[in-house]
Length: 589
Image (cartoon, rainbow, N blue to C red; front, side):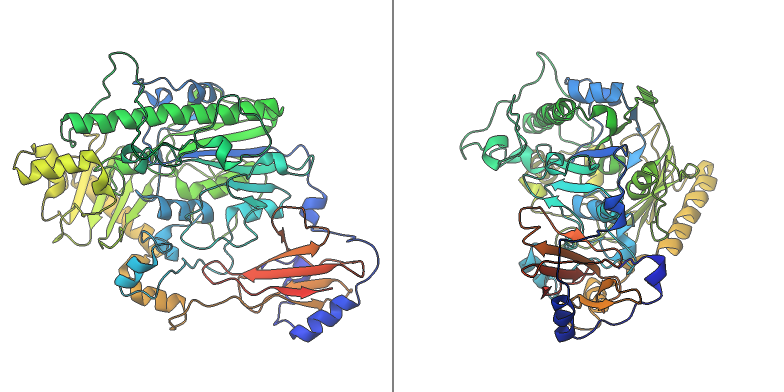
């Protein structure tokens, strides 16, 4: 929890529930007189922030040098923004990546590194785990969206989460398929995320799924599911639309067969559709007169969807396109080669809005009021993928990539059932079994890995030639090995802890996820009310009914408040520490 400096030292365990109710019974009169200071004084000139996030996509667009298809909307965004071609995820798969984005911390340091910790309970139990669990950052950590809410922003997420923990109610004003900046109170700045799913791995082999295909000309202030998605019958696959005569490039690690080429064509066609969705959102921003007051980020949650891309720590799995457009068009059309990591998103956005990044953040502000010197390295990690355990760490500078394989006795390739639905994956397996793979294609199927690998990504962009044993690169190998050691010592590496033991550690030795203590209420020395939970790190959200009945989400409690409620009003509050279960609702009137 956060309190103002005047009461920060007064934190203590809350009063009993009965006293909680009695205190509220004394609060009668008019409506609420004061709310948190950040909302009350929000400067309408504060810039808005819009994040447009696609999935599973390497920089395969014209703005980053690949003109296989036209992406006019991303090109127009790039024309008024800055492109960052050296942007890297912290993992080659979505949930750990989104864990880092949401918290500004490396997944290996907070237990968000295994794919996944939620949703597939049966698989988790098959691994000996008690079921779903959540990553557990330090008590002071918050989701970056909550920090913006505390500073007066209306925060929305449409709609994917996948954070490796349950998001507390303090995270968003709106979360779901209809979440939109258009639902904010007049004049309030917003932070809005839109997740575009059409480029996801599944859309290569299962294009009949819901996939956020916005209808052209659709202009309302909400997003009903039936109006902005198109579903295809199970037996129908939409045609791939590519320029006449265009044949997408085929990486050498994929099998050169017609089925593989169909997958690659589908990847590009999905990018074409995604570009239309980007245009839809940019047009809405323009229609609302907000283009000149909104910072726009476009990026992908990690690299490409095809075999030897997603889930791996090669650049094909980590490198993503990033475009940032400022409201005033500063640096419009530029390309900035600085190294950008996903852990930098939270501190960078905070810095751009004049918010000092918190000490627990492990990234750095790339621009804004608290900009730091350019980073020298970016880092990434790979651990459990579905039911398969491996442990690999990566560090990269502008040119060279170092990989450390903790289990060299295990092969690279993991038989992930989800990935094997790809025809291109099936083709690799067919040719492997027939002994017909090329050297580049067969590398992935080696039954052992080197303990260390070093790649020159400028001269070997597909990372096929290991330089770790060559004397000419001994100094670079030592440099990056040292950089990795220093990084792991600085942030910690929970990947070395068996997952069952890790969950027991998070759950204080028990087999049930801890539940956050209910929020309770007390008065401070000047008569203000303080909501607090006995659980360190608990974030408290509250609603006043019936006043909030038609408002989305819950309010974020940050500091003592004077509540002045009508006799029929009810105040409800819940608390949750990230990684714990949500408390029950405390209620008073």
